Amino acid sequence: MRGAAAAALSELEREIDAPGGGLDRLQLVPTPFVPEVRLHLAEDAIVWWARMEAYAGHALPPPYWASAWAGGQALARHLLDHPELVAGRRVLDLATGSGLVAIAAALAGAERVVANDIDPWAVAAVTVNARANRVAVTATGSDLLDTGPTEVDLLLAGDVFYSRAMADRVLPFLRRVVAAGAQVLVGDPGREHLPAEGLTVLASYPVPTTEPSVDSPVRRVQVLRPA
Image (tube, rainbow, N blue to C red; front, side, top):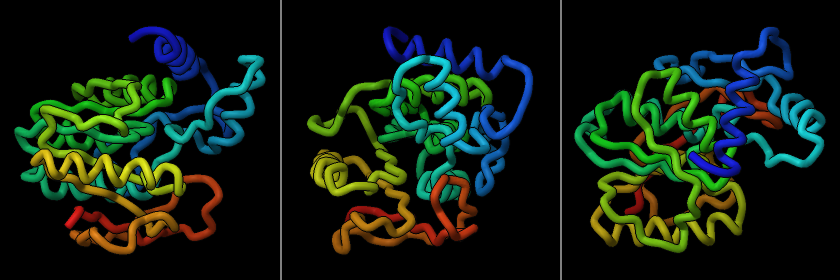
């Protein structure tokens, strides 16, 4: 690991090893809907972000990796409940965030798991979270959306339709992956930019809400497959 990801990893390891607790600290905790997986999460990611920016003296990317998002929780639950989907397969987890879905794939028996996110802090978070769960996950920070990934049997994408700009890039990428012969699974809590057509619902889960700025304590989340 090099550059920004290496620097972020150093900071995360310092945070994890520092004593104390509270809203502005990371804690290694079971994921609410996927207790088999433990993640380093912030009780309040916004408060943690503000403290870390003050410490760094400059702006940091939003810590999306410090929350367990609903789409990822449902997708991880689905993989652990149906390990035949991943067993012995080469898996890519797109926009991985904390690495929850990638870790679940590894626990379910995937042959190889790559977790991808353009945020160097997410790459670092995947590294510490995979270590905490004693699984092998390769974390990468490349922007893959203008490419067509090779050597992938299953692509996983949780919570990727959070903006129009992201949806406009992700959809063609997912179609290229399917056209290349790989399977794609998406986890989404009904976000505004989720396509209305072209996806088949495989499962639906009531997922406890942990991410910031969501009023409901439970969200109905679907696992979908491009038709």
